[in-house]
Length: 401
Ligand code: AMP
Image: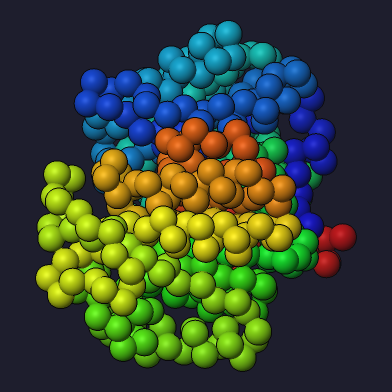
């Protein structure tokens, strides 16, 4: 796949609209608790500053449902950006209203304007061409660096691209990096290639499992998903989370793995509790001995050792989804242990965004990973083999070449 990229654009001294993903988590006082997504956008912003551009930045935050809501204001983002860039960042009072429009018009080279949360405009999530036209009227170039929303056909991601020709739009550095890693992973991985898939539900990852199966050499299943596979195999899983309607799909995946020669791993032991509670008493049991009324909430030590053995010769590891309820200390050990084993490996280690990104950070091994995606939903859609609308809009088609 060939992309139009920021480096192909002759944007020196021009006005550039950069769609970023500044959807960062805030605490109850409105402080940013994790600014990875802001830092991830700096390379593109600095590149434009180095080329003496004037910069209009746009992002969403949360789901304000198409109207102004102070709680979702990008004020904290403007402050953090200012601190990271060591320069003023002006926050517009609105998105495409009189304040934003006049400030964008008056913007001088080297200055940065941040629009208010694009989802304050109802047209954003509707991919409204009128809203996109207003965005496009603010700048001569469009750069998408918001991988985390590239699976959404939204006005500042998709519709806006129709107002720029191929010489005036492109992917920012972060978007390029995300695409490069996932493309290599799915098209030409260095083998052996292992996918570790966990999390709460098979249903959420079914398409990704099916798409990945013919591409991997080994597949490890963890988290609550494992219980649907064990139950499908006729085992007692107590009150653990099971998706009864997916038992056949689980069996089909196991059969497919066998047919394709993929080494398929399930956990062999669990941490179980009578209740889904942090302070519940726990037992450590093998998969054959899960008590009837108990719930499996983490994988056990034998499983993490088994998975360590399995990953020891791998050259590429993709990890998407935790092994247990890692948000509760008592059920975090399996995920944290595995995070350390993955970190120790010499493989190329790619972490899908969302929970798994938080998990490796909490385990203190984020620096050891080759690449941590900034988009949970978007990376999952890439793993499912889908084309993301925000990326398709920047692809060079043959007739363009
Ligand atoms: P997902 O969004 O599907 O990747 O799932 C992530 C969530 O799965 C996390 O919030 C975990 O707490 C949850 N999870 C992982 N293992 C289990 C389990 N054994 N039982 C219930 N929830 C789990």
